[in-house]
Length: 320
Image 1 (cartoon, rainbow, N blue to C red):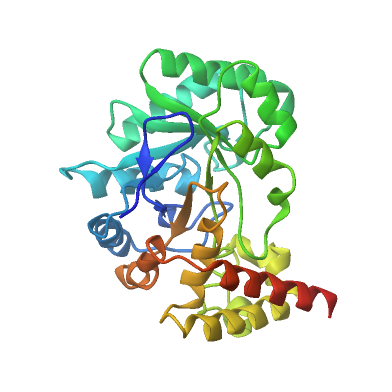
Image 2: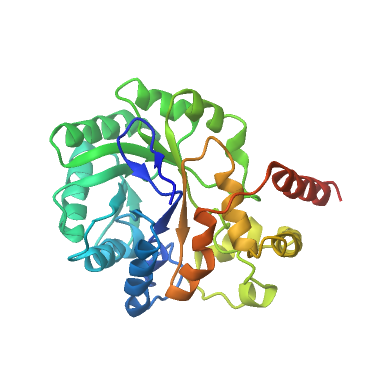
């Protein structure tokens, strides 16, 4: 499998990485609903067997449970894949989630992640959200200290704007940015991609299938049946009138994919990887079957003509 250098690091990552958000399970604000650990562990193993060499998680996912699952999956695994995790989202004893970029909190969170991951060092440590904005400099400075101390190898940010990245860059180089990006979520193209490309900041995009919307498995009925704690219920792309538009786009992707024997989800992932500003895509899954359904997107490449067809179709829908 092709490997790509991530920003200013010596990490060479597969085009697709394992997204462990859903593996955190249910019972917390921001979950994707219940998840069976008995499905998560073999799914991670299957993805690694197919050549994916990095896992993206966060302390927030499952309020620590996702990191624990990653540790269980990697126990005794050789070679060990890169593990990326995040700080800044914190929670109290009642599970109420807050935000902190105070140095003391960042250090405490890093120690907690190292303990849950059963790791001596975190390969990439990222600020999850730039909140509170006024504490970005303090939080980023603490990440620099953690890197200097050898607790983390590289440091990155997630969901940052260009102006926020510039503030961090004034202190120390950013290795990577993690933003949302998909065919139907493209706000970062105008300003963020040019900045990261010019400054050699790696980009690992999340939700390349728009939180499952572009997989080819989503229907209006399934959306209506989301559990009450599924955060996707509140996303504009899962609500009308965008839901109908997006599902029509999926049918176009299905037809286009028949030429190459690919699913809508595989095309959606490949579309993000076709952008030269993108280093890799985080792909979430819940089972071995789902891994088998997307793994070929790591090597499949859309032609320039196919990319244009998809873009033209979306523009036509917007105009209509």
